[in-house]
Image (cartoon, rainbow, N blue to C red):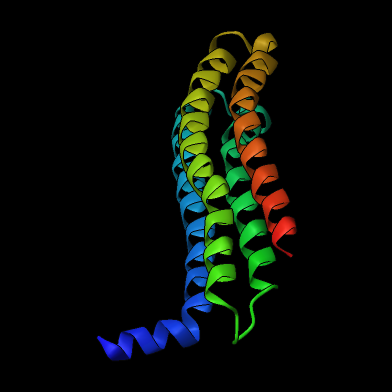
Length: 159
């Protein structure tokens, strides 16, 4: 137990900051992978019958991928602030900074993927109304953007 206490007193800040990076990148990336995957499945079903709708289907499929980019960006920004002697309180702060983009990114990407699947149905039945599906999916994106902005502002407040 003493060894663990010594480790955290020497490297605890780095540990928590690294954990924050992992969460920001992994959770938002998992949500994006799920959302893009669901959209891709729906797109493949549509394109089997109507291959000329590829570009529109691709737009709907890719929308949930942005959350993974937001998490990756916050992860890189935290990584750029790492130092071997990072104090524990600052490392915990970096960990907490990662939580909005990680958690909201995960859930919003999953839900955006579901909305994108519904948008594929609009594209299949009413191609002229395709942008309605894009707008509906983009509404879910709002919360991912807000979470990214909160994480970004908090990160810059820490220094």
